[in-house]
Length: 250
Image (cartoon, rainbow, N blue to C red; front, top):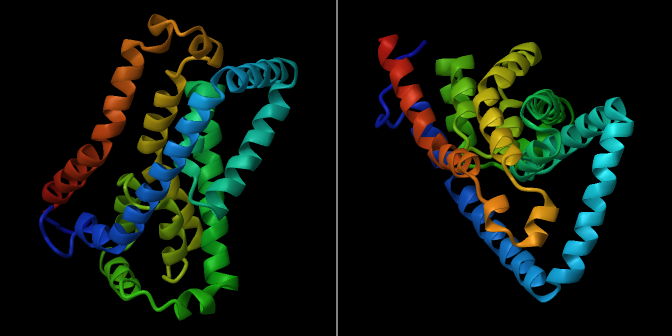
């Protein structure tokens, strides 16, 4: 495992931050706009919207009880496609935690996200390679150089840091010489801590019926506060873990 200090310009966390800074800012701006639009719609159409959502939730829960295997298969397929072809996997992870619960949700999201990542990785390597290279992103060579220097450990660090766009990592890694099998298992392992954190946070969310009742005691719980605190601290915790692993191997 290569040595790296958290403040070193060549460390995985620093070089990764440089690659994704502009894209992250754009993603957060888009998220804010969508959140404001949804919040406005919720305020204006609160009663009708809640009634429709509660009805949909009831049907989803009934389907989960009547066809549990089919629900898992559909959940895997949906997450596979969303995580592989779009940048909206983080929000979907919270939804899966809310719907499937901690353990089942973790299994579905862990395998679905790795399969989706590998799909985008293969598309980038075997089908879209020339188009990706034509983008001529100034940071692509730096990412490839960092991978050539640090190998699979670099990918592992990218997967550990939740701030790194999942979609971007899959595309850029397709341009490297990493094996598909190595990409799979390193991604599966590296994304697991973040997956568990998101699924646990989602599993603490209240039902829509509880939201409709307006009972603060049913909506807020210490588990939810704890879960979203961990989610907020996750980028810092993972950076500290990477720094610790680098020092311990030096």
